[in-house]
Image (cartoon, rainbow, N blue to C red; front, side, top):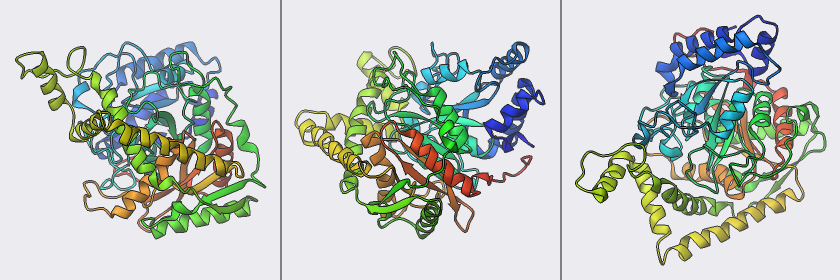
Length: 489
């Protein structure tokens, strides 16, 4: 079997039986990257020298039962890693070559002896949904390299789908783990806000950003979340909840599980392919013994507007620190300090980042704060209350992850109804702070993957994983892999 065919569990068994060494695994991984990276362009920075050195050290030391011994990972390039460049997909951090510490999630993966292969492409500062706003390159969807992989964690999803890494970390602010997971035919989890530390994840929107795992299947995803979740004294927003064994709950059936299906999730703009695949998935759940009812999330239609206000306001504050004074890009076209800051930010940020900074600055200005930001926070409460009401009677909410399959790179004249539907499907989850997962549920006639979204109660990732695993085991969608030219099978 080539490297691209393995799951974490399968590769772990090979390592445990000593049929493969850590060095063998790294050799296989970089061979795969050499085969497909020119087509996919998922990585901004490869860390091959350090990865090979770590593999050598692991072979010499042997395993002490670590949960990710010698398992290769890719990290979204807005999550800092000591000694390895972290760019956030932006020119303004192109020379940020040596962060002084590891993000907490990276530290926890290191403690379990995983091997980081490199840093993955993203929309600049996670601002986008196609990975086309990256300063460095445009990542491509492994299922069709003329199409986007989604965003902002497009590099993470594409690398997993293409078999370049066995899992990746992404961040999700308004759908940025789940949407690319759907487009690339992999599994992406957006955890409850506060379950996973954001220490070392470069901030875009403080009250919305969440770090989450992207994997080939549900079991691998549950394993990674077990490792990265938990309270962190370096992040005051993390909750003190005990972390259950998410993998243990996968063994149970779902008979009697109550599933809610919001009527808003099937609004105009949802393609017929998506409707059909999701309805088929719901029929499978009924066969598995679940009870399904239609419900309403009446304030979900306001989520995109609320998101735009809160995200832009928080982003403008977060990005204020990039001024050319302490680190990062600094303009040479200067006469004084004010000139330096203006030119640095003007030259260092891309168009999308500038747009959001300007919008956010306006929202926070005198006279606008009460009219926009405060009002958005009040509607945010209503959206969260909608979820609370549904979860008082149901275990999970199920619907599409995206309104259609991935579209072509550079496509500008998209259906406005499809764009609105895309926001409505993923953004409310972040607004409410609840967890949600996307997993493969079918394919279009053209062979492009489609995703099923399962949303759960706060800190109830266990039920989401149980529902996702039951569906996954009853179907074969997750077993399909994209075929890339010149790659070994």
